Length: 215
Image 1 (cartoon, rainbow, N blue to C red):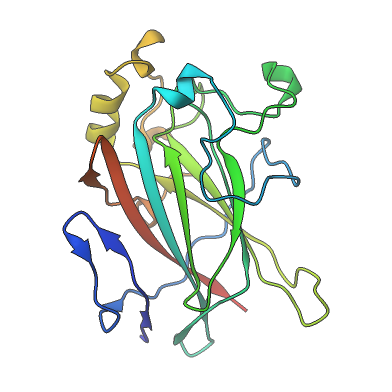
Image 2 (tube, helix red, strand yellow; image 1 turned 90 degrees about the vertical axis):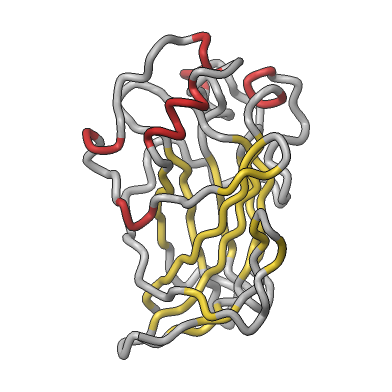
């Protein structure tokens, strides 16, 4: 199987541009009920709010590299694609949801346009849990055609190691809600292939993930 090349930041420094990274087709799963197609264009998903479930949550630096997977299994970078990211805050609540009393708020939502290496970077926080799901992050990839219209739409969900999540959930402000009710193995949408490998970084964590989409 082919590989793609990109720069990613790890806890120990930068990976060389000559370092090959895994290239596999990422599962395309349901979008879920909390997507809003008017998310701000920004890399810092924590900006513009004073909500303590965002400002006091554990920081997470997330780098994504988007590749186009050919029928033969080879990969090339997918520059220009729109990458949307959204997830719950430390209290398990999404912004911009009337039923959750967060209408008009935009925390932990945003999109970036992939650079020529197919890379986007987001500064966000470790998500909290809510009933019926394990802890996760939503990612949508929308490549554009020459006319400027979205050619296709792919949605995946990124997950976390349960033992690490348990440690994070024991911290303030995550620990105001008691034990979470679902872990990875019990979540029917969970896929080990989209579980993030996190490295400690300052007061939080950093992760990179390679997303392969079929064109």
